[in-house]
Length: 122
Length: 194
Image (cartoon, rainbow over all chains, first blue to last red):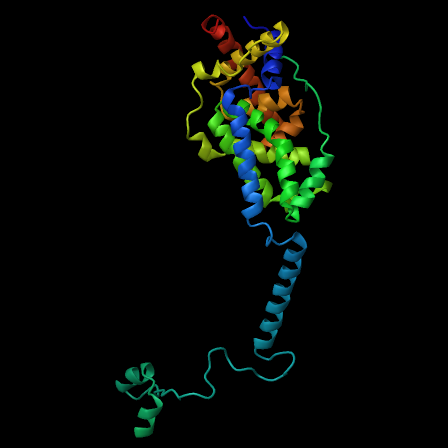
């Protein structure tokens, strides 16, 4: 039976003996180095951002988002007036809205927005 | 239970730390110098963990690609370069995609160290190493990695746990299971390999 001392010796021999003794091992080392050199010379290194630039970029993006959100918010702090709801068309064609009690045509009118030409003809 | 104590403690990594800083700034020459310093021990370790030369070469290439890409992430204030590189290398070796390929058969593993015309002591050591490599072919990769880190690099349980991204208790379990399997395997291989 293999005792602990023998096993320790065997494991130390295994873990410390250089296993790169075969003929092909030097070639493998050279291939790895060549690969590493190729990565370093052609890889995406030059343009990779340093950590400090990530912080600067991130902070700028957050600041810009906050500024845009404040400017677009109804009742903006700077204007002090009631803002226009998002998506509202203040200068374009008008929308025909039906009264609640105008009968069957109301459903169509609710869905249909005439073009400026149609509106002129009407 | 057998006492598990580290074999040695070799962690002088200042030149590597300087080179990785330069590589992080895009210095390809510094990276090549660093690769030349690291390649042999890295390949040897990968061969021990994976038990297959082609897989080991593949793993070390992956590790160098990651080293180049992530050079800027190395922070000397959070630990030594040696520990950081060891973790990166072992992670690449234990990559799940690589595990799909079979490990070297026992006959090939037995041929791992060519004793050649060496002094008697070295030849005996090489023979022992060959027998363990053959027996270790039956172990899961994580167990082989734990054995190589403990007996080869002399790391503590905590350092191995950090490298393998697990707990110290789990490392102890890996080592105990590996040793138990190896004892049986080495007894069985004694006659087979002579």
